Length: 383
Image (cartoon, rainbow, N blue to C red; front, side):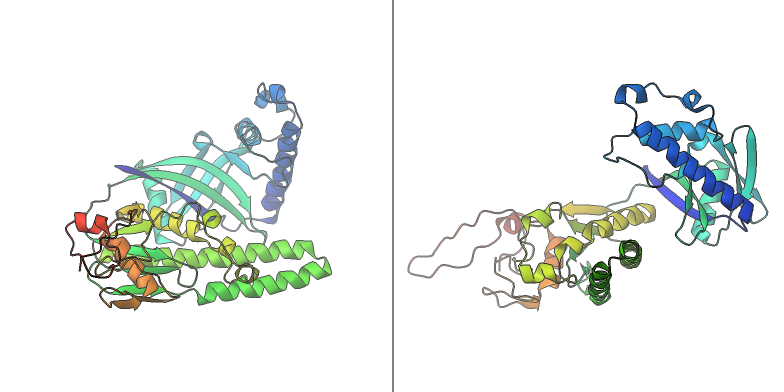
């Protein structure tokens, strides 16, 4: 059994102004405590307990978590805002009819119960599992959004069945022009285009440039957060559709291992100057993270392969050629396809190729393009 951990972001139901102001005041006090800890020597930090802050009105369980967060191995020199957080032993989930609520003691010796606003059916199912014990409760964090809405971030862990390898795979090629090209096991290739992502990147880059010339740094930060939310939402939509496709076709998802690609792949100055094409803005790892945890929840297998030569090898005969932008033409067998579709089919059919090129010329004949020995070893046709 695999373990799936999810964090539910649930707003408080009809939270009044008094409680909202109290949350905000205690969050600021919690941030002051964390910054006080950061200013201490490391030796003194190791000796800290909740008794060291007995004069602070925040509950000891919350203070202990603040100490752990402040003394964690991070490079933070000062916290601008540190949300209130506690572990699973200091909060309880309740339900009355269809309304869920949580009780916790944020202040010392005072425990309150506050209802939650739950609209998603999947969130409701997880809360029911927390109550009947089929899911394990984790930590809880109180977070205030930029709009002033208070949320409870509830962590829950549950066992999910291990994904079964059906022998069928969807090969996924990720790119900047086309975020996902998915080669299905039955043949067709499905594309998710990136026109909106590139448009968002370029529009927000132009807005940042204007705001920087005006010296409005706070507006730039808000703009960055908005851009990040839009791109994150698009990645969520793509990953959700991809996992649903794999589940419907009873197939696993095979991805390329793109770790370190930003350092290994070179960019032209003109490309880097365009926010829509700059590889530094390419959220490929976020997309992979979303695909992995959604696939784990859906029971879909995920495999990772080496990306070498997946874009250059012919999906039909295995010969190594060069792609020309979006077009792929094999000089050996004449196969023509979209370059990303060809790469997706290579990822689907066999593992990423790391092959030495051996050129054997027949007597009296010209050299032929190198074939992929990995493909030949797998018993696939060479021509």
